[in-house]
Length: 323
Ligand SMILES: C[S@@+](CC[C@H](N)C(=O)[O-])C[C@H]1O[C@@H](n2cnc3c(N)ncnc32)[C@H](O)[C@@H]1O
Image 1 (cartoon, protein in one colour):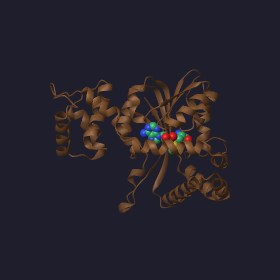
Image 2 (cartoon, rainbow, N blue to C red):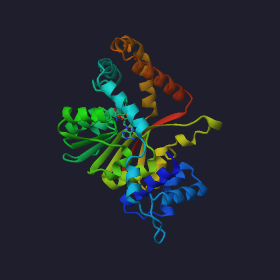
Image 3 (tube, rainbow, N blue to C red):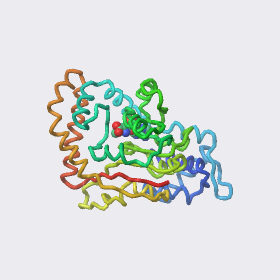
């Protein structure tokens, strides 16, 4: 995303949360992008000249109507299209369902790295009371939110930008509310919820800091995020793998969230090892369906993640976040 669009999006989130849209507040979120003062100045001037932002009144900017339009259509299109067709293919693939059953131990269409202990934690130990509203962001096939609703007698919402799948899920799980929307737009959602969960869904978020600002305005109680952090191997520096230095931790601190983290790296590594062992026997089923490219993708992901863990360049955490 271009710098002006990032600033516009940040301004929109600040406004929605009732915070003044001023340079100090904008810069707070821009820091995570490494955007310098000069670029900031010229992007602001551009937004004013194009009438996306008003001229500052006592140092505070406002979004104009065309600024708001611009934000609502901001370009997450590439990822959206990619996920939309991919998730639909997974949903319709019998071979993928068989593979999931073998890998996760549940006959559900999943696309995450949750091994047994993480799934058990999810189903038995979340702080959810009957009647709570639980929101799964990046819900994929809806299997997890459906099971949380059954196990905790809570109410459920799922959001995902895989719109064709969302349309199917609305009919498939009639007691869960499904919304076709980008996680980045959560601050404009027509609902709020007690508990948020995110299972491997935040990797493609345009700006984690503003996304968590939006989450803060919609989440009444707590959030659980499963997330794998990888680092580049430059200079052998692994600081970013500490639970307080991951992209998630930085975004949480920017929003004054308190959190604790549990290390599930060993667990995830075991899952990738298991996947490596079972993949070959599923190949022909994918091939018969004309879905060999799904299988190829899993092979590539498995090899990549086994290398990352072997080189100690990845860590997986569950963040428990209090709002
Ligand atoms: C790796 S899959 C995880 C799916 C599901 N949570 C699970 O456990 O099986 C990531 C999901 O997040 C959705 N997603 C990714 N980025 C998103 C975004 N920016 N806004 C909305 N949904 C997004 C994808 O469509 C996909 O369904």
